[in-house]
Image 1 (cartoon, rainbow, N blue to C red):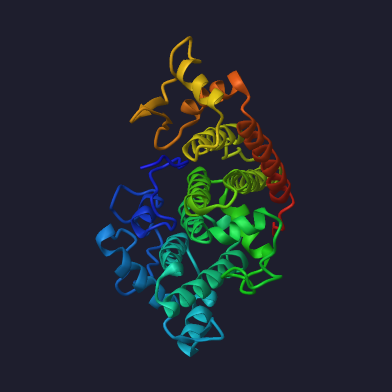
Image 2 (image 1 turned 90 degrees about the vertical axis):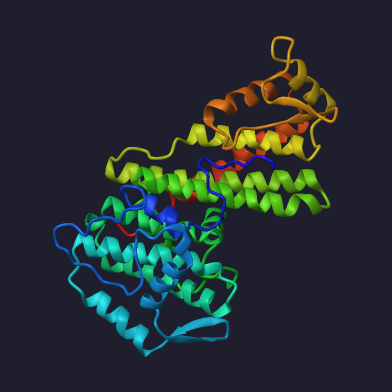
Amino acid sequence: MRPTIRETALRRRHLTASLLVLLLVCAPLVGCSLGADQSGLDIPGFSPSATSISDQTNAQAALEYLSPDGEISDGRWVPGEMTTERWEALTDRDWGPAGLEELTAAMATASTMRTDQDEQTAAKATWTVARSIEFAVDQVPPKNYTETMKQNLAALLGNSPDEIAALAGGESLESSDLYGLSGLVTDEQFETLLYRVIDDEHAADTLVTVMLQYHHNQIDEEMPTAANPEATLLGKYRNAAMTMGYLDGITELHTNNNSTSDTINAADMKRVLTAQAYVDAAQYSLLSDAAMEAAATGNNGGPFSFYTEVDGKPTITAPDPMTPEAAHEYINWEDLIHDSVMDSLDVNIEAGDHTGRKQGQSAEVIQ
């Protein structure tokens, strides 16, 4: 299996309920305490501590609670009377931190259903994500966001990778119907929620991990049949760098406005992305013979640790996941020969990072 650019062992595009448990700052596979106010929602069939065996059932229970009725009309979910009343009750409730943590856990778990094969379920989940974003932004003051809430809401946002990538590229969720949340939330609402959660280190790690995997999934899907593999790879890594720059730009915006610590190491992130780009270029036979020869002999006359031969064919391997420490060796390899494709990857990653960072720094947020 070819290596990926993940920074944690995440193998699916969407966060599962079992991963959500890890994000709840509890002991593994044990639900979080409701805390002092004991304001549990008692959602039928839902448990924040559900194991992977019951992920689907747990997510369905959360979704049914947040959107108990409705129907599809013109491809969109239209909430029914029970759903409208449910959200009115949630909006009117006097919330304590424990209740909000349980509610946002349910929101995040329901968001895993956005890509369900059943059209009605997927539409319902997408509407629920939009309503959850609106609720979190409009009904919960920033000072009331706990660490657990931020991690839950980061999981919810991570299940909207198309929308994150679109905003990173300067697109708007308000100007087209290209994305599931288009027309359901404003750019300001989506970016405000990103802004409010990204100062938590675990939340930031979740978003970075999911988006790295999202972009690498696109590379895996498109490269094997690409008419112009080099141009495709360059474009995909430019887009990936744009998203990473965007997330870091929002982090910088939050840091500058609130004197908080930066939760994303931009240098490490770019190093990992660049190293994996070189690995992919080799995987798809885009590097020169000189580059492969340098991998075999450029480490004081011997091969770099990532070089091997499979059936006599030079092969570039990579750790899974790629780490900032391991990435240094790939950068040293590139410094020896300045391969044209490697150089182009460097240029595109730098340009994408710059563009995305500007988008993040100028994000529309409600303070």
